[in-house]
Amino acid sequence: MDRNHLLKELHNQQPSWDLIVIGGGASGLGTALDAASRGYRTLLLEQGDFAQATSSRSTKLVHGGVRYLRQLAISLVRRSLKERFILLQNAPHLVHALPFIIPTSNWLSRCYYLAGIKFYDLLARRLGFKPSHLISKKELLQCLPTIKVDQFSGGICYFDGQFDDARMAINLAQTIVEQGGVPINYMQVQGLLKTKDKVIGVIAIDLEKGITHEIQGKVVINASGVFIDSIRCMDKSNAETSIVVSQGSHIVLERTFFPGNSAMIIPETVDGRVIFAIPWYNRVLVGTTETTTETISLTPKPKEAEITYLLEYIGKYLTKQPKKSDILSQFSGLRALMKPKEGGVNTALLSRDYVISVSPSQLISVIGGKWTVYRKMGEETVDVALKVAQLPFCASQTSHLKIHGWSQTHSKDSEWHYYGSDLALVEQQATSQEQLQKLHPDLPCREVDVLWAIRHEMARTVEDVLSRRTRCLPLGARASIEVAPKVAAIMAKDLCFSKEWECQQVKAFERLAKDYLGSNPIPSTEHSEALYL
Ligand SMILES: Cc1cc2nc3c(=O)[nH]c(=O)nc-3n(C[C@H](O)[C@H](O)[C@H](O)COP(=O)(O)OP(=O)(O)OC[C@H]3O[C@@H](n4cnc5c(N)ncnc54)[C@H](O)[C@@H]3O)c2cc1C
Image (cartoon, rainbow, N blue to C red; front, side, top):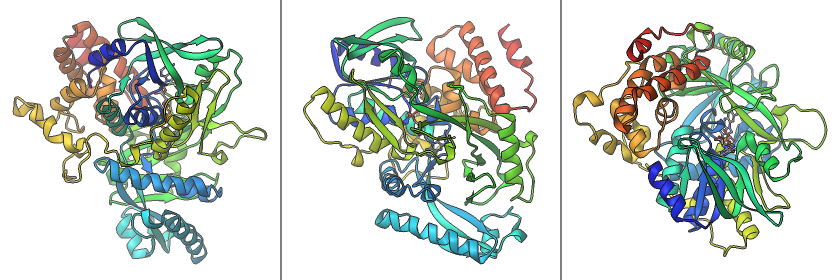
């Protein structure tokens, strides 16, 4: 996957693509992969990096959504459970089953939650992971060693999936290339080409080279997440708002606050939310909040109140109360939820299902959904697109398509197991032992990872490497700021970029990473300043 090579493909495939997909998050990547693997000439354009927006900021669950049962969203849960199984089959290097514990304090709540979870098992049918079961107080303490056990009489254990969202996005982009598609990052769609009121393509600018392209396609798909209405406005200037946006934030803590290999779910907070504490790599991820927002950004920032809320809530359950200074990283994501026709907006109650709409100009928009169902969304969107573009029908191939990196034999012991079948190739690049050493003791990032990211995974910036090719930034913001100059230097050398680029990259990364640090003091940047001035 090489950006310059893909840009050449963009020119070679003119005059017209079969499908042009706007947006390189879960929805766009799923759609482009479905189309490319059916044999259609497919182009995907992403304004930033793949998964830079919501799709790298999720809770990392591949799940049916236990809490949607309360809203009686049965078909959404059933469909999600089926997709959970398919994802585990097609990307076993990135998805695994994880035990989730619901602590309960009395028999009434035990019966209530057990009934719900057994129904969840039933909906999964033969595609379920392991069956759920009751656990005693002693087992509760074994699974969640730092829980305030005196408050509980036992709990319920059920199984759901966990994955790495940004790594999945990168592997999907690689699979699209393997299937003959062309996904390009840092290519922003700024307008739509139209003839006789029908959309026939896009105007896109290559943000790296500053070159504008007019690109024709038989059908254009708007999979731009919370930016959906900005594209709809390019189609019809007075298009109505179609979504409500809600922000969800997470904090990341040391595993000492939450050791063990099980996740905990607080199934109903006093304000009707669900909070998870989930082991993720060698940290614990706590989230999420849900707050309506009007601010749409590629890099949303957690609000003080959200962080305080998460710290206080999780502190009620753990023997060691985390403080703001214990936060290693914090981040927010934005959900695009379908706007209700009428009534007030409690976003927690809005459907997580998706809608595929076709405008009179034949622009297709895909709205809502979850990472878990990205494949099904992609399949259904392509089915609609084929009808709109009157292309000959070929059936979807993705339910059995292995995602790049597929491996069932890779060792889970390696910190870099997420590469799957690529792991050996990543490490074979090393020309010295030093390149296999960590660049920072607290982060899973080596020189070979940086080189692999730029040579084979289309990383273009320090942020791409530290945030989405490796997961350093969400795992530790302070340490990531400290390691950024080394990463920039390795990138500049390999890509033959200037010292000026290197300096600008470090500064841009520091600016971004400050939001992940929250109110914690920023590490001294004297080192990097001295290096570049
Ligand atoms: C806090 C939170 C937690 C979540 N947790 C889970 C979970 O645990 N499990 C789960 O299954 N789901 C989860 N979800 C839902 C899931 O993350 C989203 O449904 C999914 O990531 C949305 O993907 P998307 O492609 O629609 O949007 P995005 O990921 O936002 O992608 C849209 C892309 O379009 C690009 N774009 C926009 N405008 C343009 C343009 N003009 N030109 C080119 N590109 C453009 C953007 O840059 C962006 O990358 C969560 C969501 C949130 C907010």
